Length: 338
Image 1 (cartoon, rainbow, N blue to C red):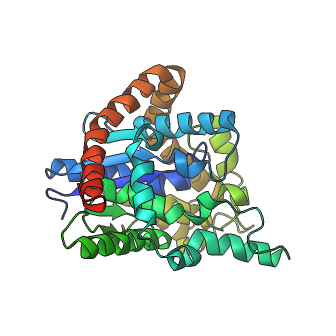
Image 2: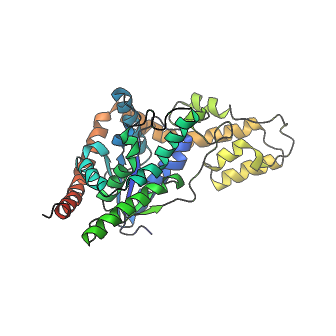
Image 3: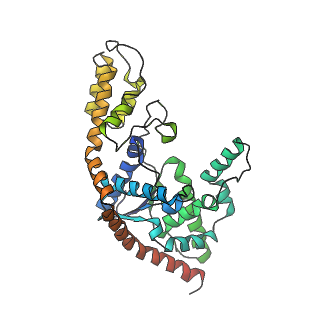
């Protein structure tokens, strides 16, 4: 499927991730990139710092978040020797390409963009003017995203279902430019939705999210992870009472990280009344720690040796820029008749 294809993934620096982030986004992105490279393709992964400043204006906080996200991906197995790993702001061609794309982006696309519409809806619910507190960065976010995608002749962009619109807008803009100049200046990308990506419930049963305060931390110490796991909601039924595993929140979370054998063991133990809630919480704790322990050591190393990470990102930008320069030249030559 990915033979000879170019895959591009962007990640916003949003702070230290939790278990749901890892299972739903970080691990799938890294695995997909590895598959592409193994099949003779290319993998670009960038930290979307231009996107991040739409919401985060404090440079100290932003710098820390960028540091954390870079170290997280490296700790969990992203190989910068095989994947092109860089910061968006280290590619000066991106803003230039974005400016050209603006001329071919219908304003209606921006009005319909999910992020803008969600912000407007939130303002209306609060009784505020539609555009209260909104900046042009948020409004034009899809065009910058299109530049990120189209710059590297991306064939495939892995996205969640709520992000398909970004790829569709990129396709529409590229299609308009190609049609206007009568040649393929920009490659039309396809989106890829990983159907088996885990949507991990939080400790209260809702989707795991920092905004709900229901997360299992990923890179904190064992004590903090244990505290979160032992806070998972359970009922008062005794161990001996047979239980349907599918009705047990601990089991639902365990599904996302356990091996088939481990899951079978927990399921049978619950059905037969041989495992209590304390037992299964400890099983989940062991599985989480086993999954993250090595990565946590690497993460701590990278965080304390961030100069090495900065060098990796700079090398990634050096690999990415020549591709961006070629795309920009193609566009300028067509647009300005050079």
